[in-house]
Length: 119
Ligand code: AMP
Ligand code: ZN
Image: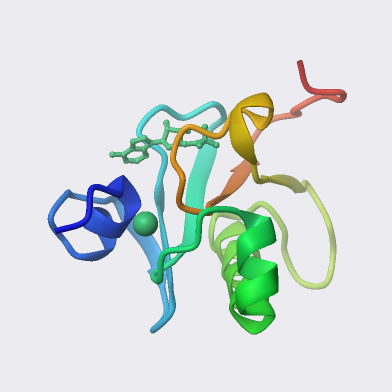
């Protein structure tokens, strides 16, 4: 059995509030939301970081980004062809990036003005 939290969520061993999935990608609400919409989008297969995934399977990374955009549409963060009101995609890598779960995930954040730059 894996000790990776997100692999265990994919396996159904730990509950996830799933909002979207495909055969290769899972999207679920963050347990500690930082914005009105805060969804995590992951490949079902384990890859540690965005860099690892783009080297191993760039098509799967594209699928993850497409799923993040589908979630943004579903959550009303964008409509039609537009970018209004908008959203943010974040992926953290390593300790300086603030990565706490070593299974690549995109954060989809929206529902309020997020400001820039981040802290
Ligand atoms: P990061 O710090 O970029 O690695 O993000 C990890 C994210 O996973 C954080 O925003 C956590 O709130 C979130 N998280 C941790 N455990 C769970 C869980 N069981 N269900 C949903 N989200 C979680
Ligand atoms: Zn994993």
